[in-house]
Amino acid sequence: MIPDNLYTSFYLLFISIISITVVFNNLSSNKNLKNSFSNPLNILIPSFIVLYMGFRDPYSKFFGDTIAYTKLYEKLSLQIIPFEFQKDIIFYSIMNLFSTNFSVTTFYLFTSSIYVFLPYYAFKKMDPKNYILIFIAFILSFEFWAYGVNGIRHGLATSFFIYALVQRRNYMKFLLFVLSFSFHSSTIIMIFAYFISLRLKDIKLLLIIWLLCIFFTVITAGSFTDFLYSNISGFIDDSRISIYMNADQNRFRYQIGFRFDFLLYSLVGVFYAYKYLITDKFDNILYSRISSIYILLNSAWILLMYIPYNNRIAYMSWLFIPYIVFYPIVIEYGKNSNYEFKKLLFPIIFFLSFNLISYFLL
Image 1 (cartoon, rainbow, N blue to C red):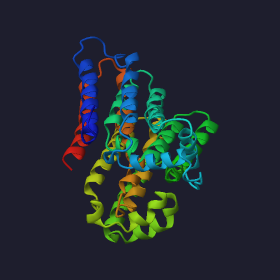
Image 2: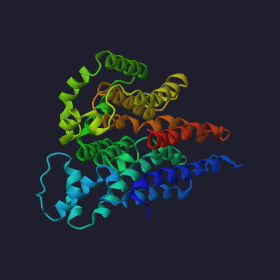
Image 3: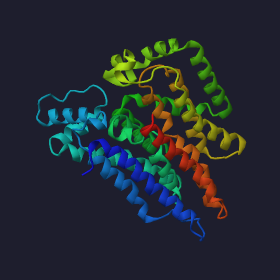
Image 4: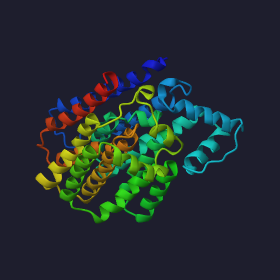
């Protein structure tokens, strides 16, 4: 039995070892590596994550909002409170349904399955042979674990959004957008970004907008953030609006102000989008669309940077960084059997290092 205070640490270390083993095992092979990642055993990686995430202690203080969801689940199960929810209705309807028939652990196994497997199958649709590389980068990326055990509704909603983007039929795409919004209403920002990206396709213009947002945020020093946030607060973090807006920095132990660390992490996605789309002339409609969505969402976060807990907004863009970094690599890797496999290592090591450093040292 793993102690609760070491549960997340063990996950990070174990999944890091597994991921690095998969990468180095292929690196050390002397055979043609072209199809080396299309292994049926790849399914074991997301399966382990689902089981490990789902079987966490539902009453532990070490898993953020899990304990709050558990208490609500028990109240619904015992019918202590009536089922009355105005927002995120699909999520709470599923919770209410599970609470009358299953244990809370079963519910968390269900939510973990959606959170993990929707991106897994989305990446598999993008590249059936080497998708596991993108998925490995995704599970190693900053905040992945947190939105599986802490910001659960938000994590589920973003997984539906990711899966929507790979749908070819518009009705399926829009249905998944609705599901995403019904799990967490903040994803309306992501849906808006998608529709804006259909019209605003000039990546150079989007990069200029991103830079202007940084400049504007610096010179206004948060005053515009307060104005903008007050006008869209109905879509962001629901009942916690007043807590976040009036959060005391020392009490909540959250750094308030210009986040250079978050901006540097965001710069990774911007850099690779610029490199592949402008410098390397990578021509792929889905990649261009997701890169545009990323820059738009990250620009929105920059304008809201001064609010406490702005990482909840930033994550809506950050979750695309593994795709932006890896998709062109796996496409080239799949086409060219002489592709230097070592070029795959640096991004993997970056995601791994940033995640471990942010958890253990910051």
